Length: 158
Image (cartoon, rainbow, N blue to C red):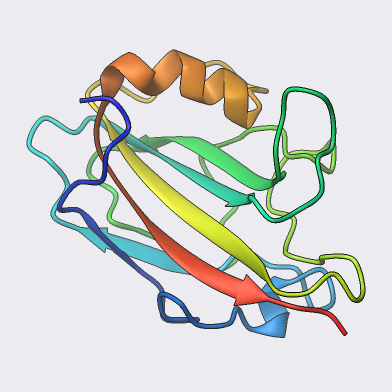
């Protein structure tokens, strides 16, 4: 399939697509991951992965763009939601240099940033190794991505 949007629907009770992410889910708040839920996973889905990425952030190193806030994978194929502050499945390495969720916190005065919460459906089981960053995860799952969609939210610090 490659990386193309599918009919899967990704939603959150914390925000709407195109809306602003509540401060609770940012580095200025409690910094807890938002609740997510999805429907219409493709037939044959055996696992899921979730990524939160800010393409508006300044480059962090040559060859990368934006800033990765969350990498979560090895989510079983029968799961259809993630609770707020989820502490299950496999947390990959974010651009903060840690695992788990690190919420939006763009530099002061940097304007509005867009945060893409990506959901990827995979036709392989949840058995990827620990410690993958976004780029490593994408390289491993690309041949097995059978569906994907995203929610985009914004955040700005004055």
